[in-house]
Image (tube, rainbow, N blue to C red; front, side, top):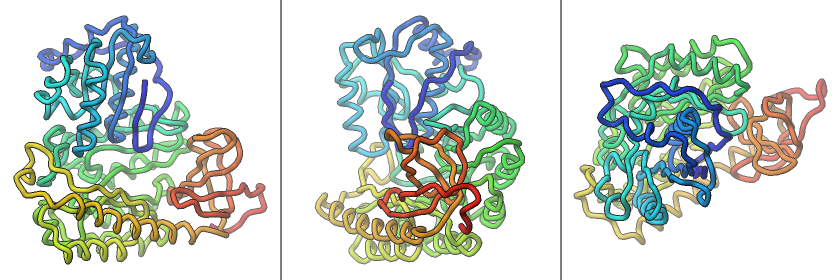
Length: 441
């Protein structure tokens, strides 16, 4: 299997028995049983949620007696697709065309909204994501290293005018608190230290069930064991509904002081055209409230440059919000028209303008990233080893989810202290402090 994730890959989950879908889903539930006993190659793209679907699919296939292999050995190829922007869509079509002469299956967001486009390049069977969820038990899956992933909800309550993922994943459907708590318990028992909660909008969890995320976080924090939770992406409008209790929930040392708050634009006029449901002042309110309680908190964000009609002044407001909020780690995307969305009928800005603005925003984001990391140099901080990306070094996290690379081969779950010695922008360098010698945070 080949993963192409933002931040998660890992070993295969253990084989287990397969719970066949109920009659309610039989109209979409024939493909997985058809794969029984085959040699299968999987490619996976997109967000953490999508990769968690892949891990669940792997477990189902292994339970059906399948063997996961490389592409040359495989009888069947499965592509778990993403279509969030046009460039990703083009990449998916190239990958599908590559395997067009094979026994090919497609899952993920693309077949849910662009099945006709898929048929233009290949003949493929569709594995509906609902079928994966029906056939697998629980909502947790292992990720890379000592990371476990819990899918707390699918869909959202937003109405963003540019978003094709909303069309693919539909309305909010939250997993029950007990399902989530069971998944966390199982992952912690299996050795996971970092628990990632994922969904299209984690802050919206429970709205369809009369429940709220802060209560869930507090229940998770009461689970015995050594672990910490990294909550996933939270829509600002959803955060505003639960702001004070959410800030309180982060008091627990079981919750990383990390918030992913995608704001997309700093201009209220653009946010209105995007149908985001909040203002730039709302974003500042959220950021200031968290940082007042947790000064070192890492708050990341997403921005879209060149949204249709964006003026120079509106872009300058976005730059100003980025500086004001001092977001650390910013994902910047040039606006990309997505079929079927309300914004698709709007006239695109020239690519040159979108590119220039993207570069300007990235330069400012990098300056802020460097400034945040520089604050840690010379300080000592608690660390836990969570991943490995290169020989003789280990990726660790501190309570604020700072990415710390230690030039030692540490076992997953190792805890200690490190002195931060250098900034490499996307991570910092840390040196282990001998037990009993360190002090300070």
